[in-house]
Length: 223
Image (cartoon, rainbow, N blue to C red):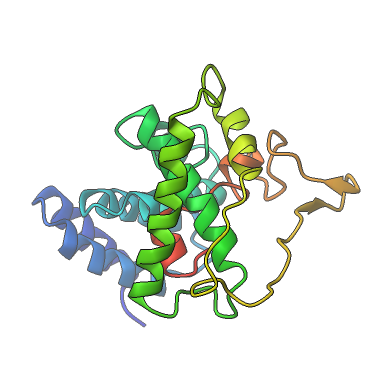
């Protein structure tokens, strides 16, 4: 087994030298070899991994790493970074509210489409391009209305959830599966978006395990 502690320090040094790609390689190896009993060190690895991912432009994956770190250690750098970079949809913050809204709408419609696919993945780049363009057309139509005016992120998300896009038969998947309903078995009821996440992180469900997956997670089936 590799020396995870040495790899962690190597990753931190690479970050200090502004070599985020090199840091990411070392940190991923450190994470793979670090014993699960080393909670504080796992938290450090996930924290620095998030920084490396953020610097190489993978903001969705960076947020995922910090959220994981926050579950390992509830109070620490990872939680602060997750709080700082999470928007009202539980996604990585974009450059503006408009972009936050668009990314949430896109992710919701993509995840709804991909859930009907057997492998939760597009069959080809052409299929993905067509689906994304159809969603973008729907978004442009929505923006021409006042449907989002004065609404919170939670209210906008509910509006987005009620919008059903009809895809042409050329890209429409076969009859698919229903979305999984999150349930809190201790409380014996469904989990609401504003409830505390049952994973124990202390965050709201919609900003933790029930958050909207980002485009990187959808692309690689991490949702």
